[in-house]
Image (cartoon, rainbow, N blue to C red; front, side):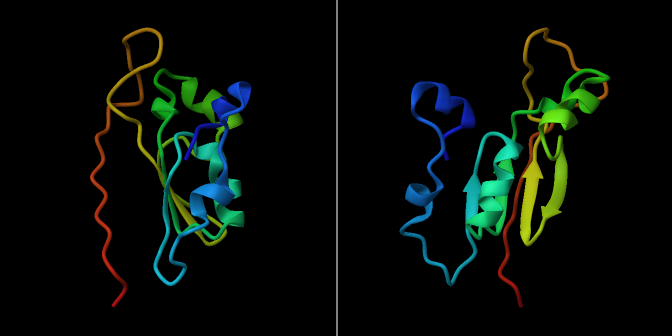
Length: 114
């Protein structure tokens, strides 16, 4: 999914196009850079959104500031019927420092329901 920052260049997210040919009988996983895209994912019936962008807040009190803009900063949460997983990532933005937000390389395993 294109990032919301693409809106500045007339190239923002287009959920209808990205999801138009999906098979609705199987779970839908959406890769969306920013967690803030979860509301659109919920409206489009996405089962799981995988995101990053926040770096887990990177520096204290960055976690608090990131929560003002994003619905989740790291980890697994649920919005209505859609799961959201946000990785802290292994990189950084700005200064090459992380305090209170250790790097994270996530491994996501998906298994069918029994």
